[in-house]
Image (cartoon, rainbow, N blue to C red; front, side):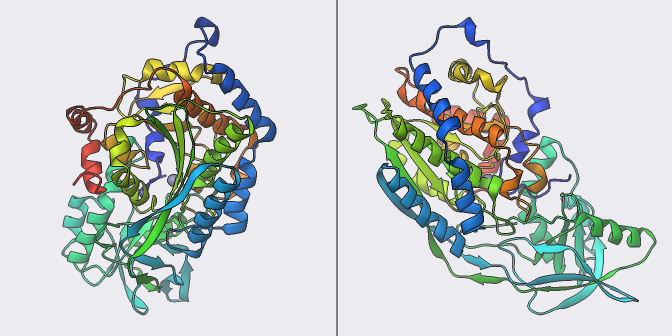
Length: 495
Ligand SMILES: [Zn+2]
């Protein structure tokens, strides 16, 4: 897999596992149980015995379908989630609006190889938030290699009037992060050099193509050129022809519609705590998806887990010390637009927000937590993981990256964790038509849901505050050490 377009899902993080020190959780017998442990045990039991997370996934995927922010599907999902939070009896249920700088609708798209035997259809799909071709275009293909600045510079004199083929390289973490944040500039540079469109090799098996935004920002800037994912088998064909000294001609017809700014909403509900200081734990996932498939793993699974946590707490009559706020964002796939708007709107609450827990790596078995550059949380994470020992060894990954909705919290120094999960079911279908609920193993998924819920509850109910908010100087140090600051800037989280 080239994994070029990781979009705003945290897969890149998954590649970290071999690179970082893993800290195994000590065996449960080694230490005394914390006071919240009995509640954790009850939550785990409730999720396994009566959990409705699979039903929620089914509503989001089979009934509603794909949920690109601004689409009918997304609107339905926002309404449904608000209704479900109300039906569960959460308090302060509301939808918080934010602005999306432009709207986008997929139209028909075709790519064909023009050959002696007539046009030969190639497997392709437009990336989201990219323009169409304004009528069919036919041009010669030019291989621009991996699409690094030096590759574009080398090809610049020849790319004018041609369609660029990019085959990203590298699957280790630095390569993946590089390719992801390289994409907007790559397409802009190709446009400046006169390219007409860009074909990017898909990193999926069996002709599955990939989608994601190439560029999206608050000012409404979108990808500079029509950009399509091309099935890797067809990339192989084109490269074989090029290798024989031929110059393939391709014919593209892409009819996307780019529209004006609009308002999307995040869906918010709370389980009120008893704490007079009104400290908060936020438990979150993104409701929106990309549009080729119904986004079962990315991220109906996370949303259903957040709702199931709320349902389980209510069913058990639990009332924690701190308030637990459940948030389902939209605009995540376009660059965490919803969570960035949330952090902006709730800025005065960030000092008393003790943690943000994010689930966005599908429905696989839970394996630990990403602590986003923080080592000071290790002891507490290990303690919180003790009641979850039945799900296997938990590890703590310290890597920091801006790839999902924890990023705006991280940039504000608020403790933020992403549930680390087995990525095997996730990678092959991520952002594709094959991201469907049949990829979910119910037992692994229930383990992940129970881990999210039990951990959130323990953080909310334990006497000691979980971690602390970092100072701006400490945030800056993490940003510099891990290079995440560059990503925050690129994503518009840091101005
Ligand atoms: Zn996601």
